[in-house]
Image 1: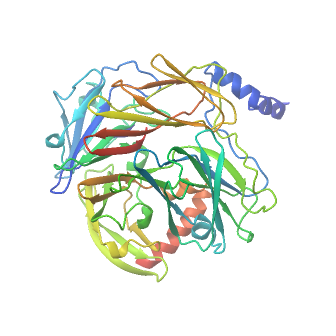
Image 2: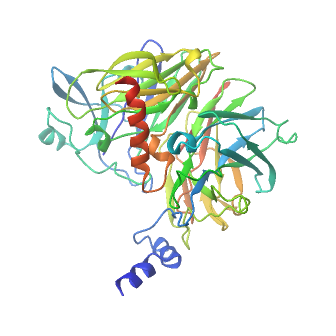
Image 3: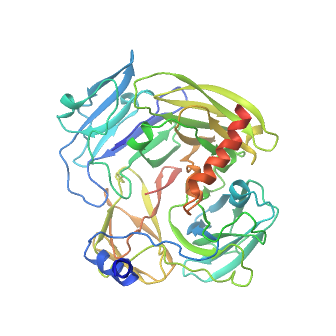
Length: 253
Length: 261
């Protein structure tokens, strides 16, 4: 099961197109759109109504999106099944190969826009861990501003602070530290002086999806980085990634 | 006997049959070599219509295997898969970038594909089954505006990391086929409100593939690529290739967006 999300802050506006068809089967499913968000240590469930703009998509515009909300497709049984203490794998409609994705677009009032096909799989929300991402692999020193957005979804309805760091792999030092929070889309500005090959983004407690935004003259670039294990295809990939993470984690220990 | 049946069930011919009747289809092939391999996606370069391309890649051998003297080769091909040039890059940083302009490509104003391979003669930390895949990021700038980035999407070719002698051999069987055009992939995006949409396809296989979008049919020779303008709000691709997903360019006013499908 996949969850979807957007962003709505003073820098970026967003739009999400959540399809009502699978990518290998155009047959429409009669599913409804729901959102949930954490409040006082409970997941609040609400149906998102009147956002089906065609038979194929739910379209969520900027005013429909908050930074702590996540969206998912389900049928009416969700009201009986929903557990306000823990997100569950409610259905398998979005378990497809290739992955079931929603178009997640960010845009500026001046006209620039950029998007990617986005999803947050259920398998990620049950785990704690650290994310690792190379800053210069997507941040652009030619741009006027660079940001990294970190979306975390954790199964429990907690709004807990944790740390993100920009670390220097060569000097084994912390260049910058940020406080971010769970079940939220966090936004961090990256100084152009830190867009260097040896600078990595790492978190200390929770996973997340790192997405990079660059801006210049109202043009935008928006893309996520791959998780490190995608660089290795052989069976030892998790050992290799674990070794690298261990090495980088020692910098923030 | 069990092993024989298993091998038969997973043979190339059996997989082709299974894919043709959609019975437990196998979308991707696997590298089965007794030497370490470097797998490359088929990346798109564009120098047409005011475009230039920026390629960003990591030194994976250094980062994960602590091999610090490796190098890469980037092989540039035309859309008809004719080799244009090979760029060898030594002295790698952990993260690197390379700009591809019309001038760099011998004044070619067009589009095509390129592949990246990592090589090293230092193999002390590499096992025979090790296999790396540089997914990389390609940025596209139109009329010298900001590069908009997209990640690699499909494993296509691979090479022996440590063999100088065979470095010009690039094997591929990483995407499987069906006998029939029975694979349907619908892009989960509404294309309706854009001024223009382009889809970039590359054939990731060593065989000719057929595909159609609506009532238009296309054929792509091995590793050839094609840029197609589409007008439908919903795009379904019917193909005999088990994994044929385009890179999308959508335009609105003076701005454009690029992403994978």
